[in-house]
Amino acid sequence: MQLDKQIVLVTGGGRGLGAAIVRSFAAQNARVIVNYRNSREAAEELATSLGADRAVALRADVTDAGQVAALFSAAEEHFGSPVTTVINNALADFSFNGDARDKADVITWDAFDSQLRGSVKATLHTTQAALPGMRSLGFGRIVNIGTNLFQNPVVPYHDYTAAKAAALSLTRTLAADLGPDGITVNMVSGGLLRTTDASAATPDEVFDLIAASTPLQRVTTPDEFADAVLFFASPWSRAVTGQNLVVDGGLVKD
Image (tube, rainbow, N blue to C red):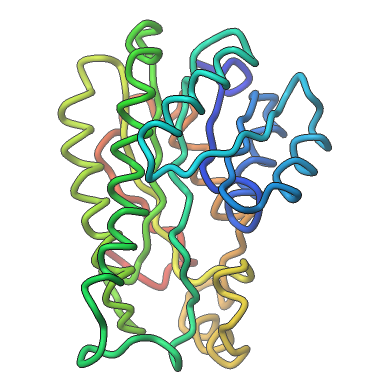
């Protein structure tokens, strides 16, 4: 299915990376659901700027199955057709601040639980809600947002990294399960992006160090990252599923 025929849900789409992904799909004339939990003003402003026929802002906490079911119903009612494409971008509350991170001797299980719910539970909910519509169409694209930290834990964010690693495992098992339905499931993993709300607390010297370590000699932007998300939703990835594409300017080689 061409991008301009797709109805795309971007969780956490009101700001940061999510907003960049929304704008990238809209630029390809896809119709987009801008999901938000707390960022109502930003999400509605973004959707309004794209036009009511192309975008709608809908609130849901994606860790709540009932809210996710209502989200999908509202999206289908608005656009008159099922969601074809899900981008699991929403991030549990987190700040990439290495100095303030919870170290191994003090981090609590609650921190892990919060991240696992945000990465794995939310992905399970959106996938299950999307399946009836995708199966009716014989087509579906699911793209999960990951991290290069579980390959290169340059800053040991224990809870966040463990949750994203679990999400990669779920990506691959879902790909194996849903492939016969014409549904692909992939992950795009980035490093630190310059700049999102989550990375705003990162000192400039850390960005500079990362840039100096990459072949491209710069830090990846949200717009550049969004390009890879478009690839996994596009017809050019039709034979690709269960994969994890690292988009970090060449910092991580595996």
